[in-house]
Image (cartoon, rainbow, N blue to C red; front, top):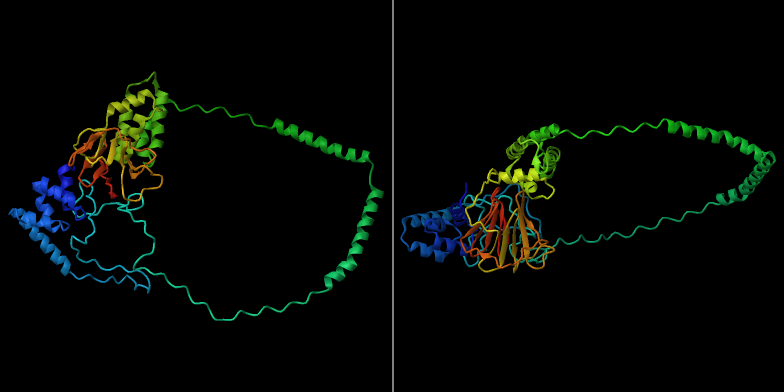
Length: 444
């Protein structure tokens, strides 16, 4: 189980943590000062301040830091035999070099709650949704060049083929054969007029065909099959068997599909907002817990929220799910925070709300906004989905309570911690989340 102290320890050890956050931890968390001293991203002034404290643990951490940096600088970089030589005119990537705090790139945001120090963010993305700054430059820039087009061949254009002499045979055939064909056609027409029958003969010939068609139509109507009897709907016992088997038979890919199995049971086995048999409530609870074991906690949580919040859920089923609560859903990254449903950062630039979905809105920002986001950028985290833009449902500004620096707000599934440099929010079931500020945002 992760805790806030464990999360701050991971942030203090991560070389991507920014200087403002490292300074805040060193000033407000004395127990984590050795961890900050050993972080290779800590800036020199803070290192000097920590060294002046005369703390043996801090001095030992500074010694380990110097030894680690010296060992890393002395270690040669092996050549990669699998990498082909670069073509002329194409960009190459130089080996990393030591950087001073003046020219070093700003460190990345803190890791996910419970993440080991120095560990990369699993599944982190840096795309147009989660930009780390304004980077609208073109695809080409300094250090890049285009490959010149191949030179045109000097070969001369091939000569045109000689013109073929048109044959006179078609004109000859047309002149000779056309009159013959006309005479044959006229002869055939005259013979058909001389040998043609009377209208009575034609009517007599068509009558048997019409009679045969009428007879065939009567035979077809007489052979039409009788409609099949209507199938009887499944009985309540069959619905109960389907719910009991759901943990073993679920595909675990669609909470909506599993939801229909529960709705069918409630429709067949409840009356006037109550179960016909009280054992059905126990059956529903056992099936939901079984789905968490056979699928995962996010699948079970998404199904739980759907059944509890949907207006289409019958009252008996909704009451059973609401009585269960959410304590049975396993949280891998729980947080102990204030039970707030809505709050704002101290600078007033990040507004969040915690409900069945976590939403946070950055009002003023310098990074490129996703498409469709005009008045700030709103991001959403659902129990079974990672952070994504949701500007169609912006978080309103309503004078929310301020979440002070270092404080945490949480509900049954989500949590947020306020820092001076950013607002960090995550899913307590999976640990996945997002860091938000005016200059950047980053998922983890």
